Length: 309
Image (tube, rainbow, N blue to C red; front, top):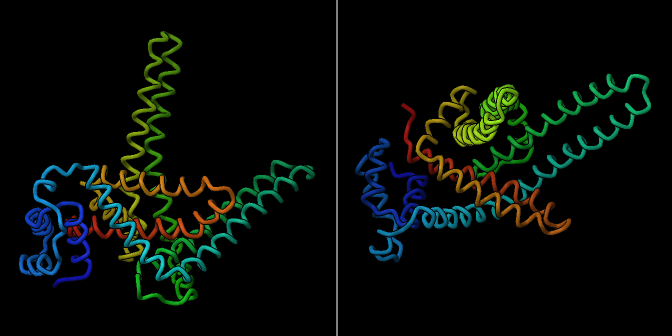
């Protein structure tokens, strides 16, 4: 069956210079039927690009072209659902401001209390619990983004997010722990290096190795499991299954994902440079926009990867 998702994928691949033959080969290996592929290819008009130009298209140029396509598609979706996205972000902002005020109150209260350490611990624990509540509007935003043009009410998204919040939080925590594995490698190597440096300063280079290894492993694990929350929001899978599917989808797209993440992050950095207005715009518009962009990127990767084996 020819789906809109299939047509969008072919259109984006053609826009970045991928030939119909290559697209067909990739889709066949992912389990798509040849008849559906041929029908979808014939429905998508080819871009006006010479074959010679396609042949020498570099990886970075293809990423920029893909970024441009995803950026415009994400903008169209944000524009359509801006009202519901902004409402969700407003709720998120209220929770964030509550965390900040609660932390300031805790520090102030601890400074006058006879046991400031105990008071501070209780305050920070409470702040952590309240901070977890930001996951509810974040998950609600994911649900809204996933619905695309078939948007529901704010109440429905918040109710659904509250119901599934704990599983989302579990996925978020597991992703953070797996990413932190790189930091653990760095820590172990650094401890060993510091011990050996007492014997000889030549072992100081182990610190550098530790930083490099830790950074590489952390980035690898981060990119591998980053899409797990998008898997969950789209497919309502369990914690382990979401992580497994994210790993499977990302197995051949690590560099491509990192390139997209850098481009999107740079866009936000440029916005936040503008005093006062910049950070506000980045929070209310940039936040939902990134979620839309990454959700579309996830669907592209999923389409190419096919069903998990």
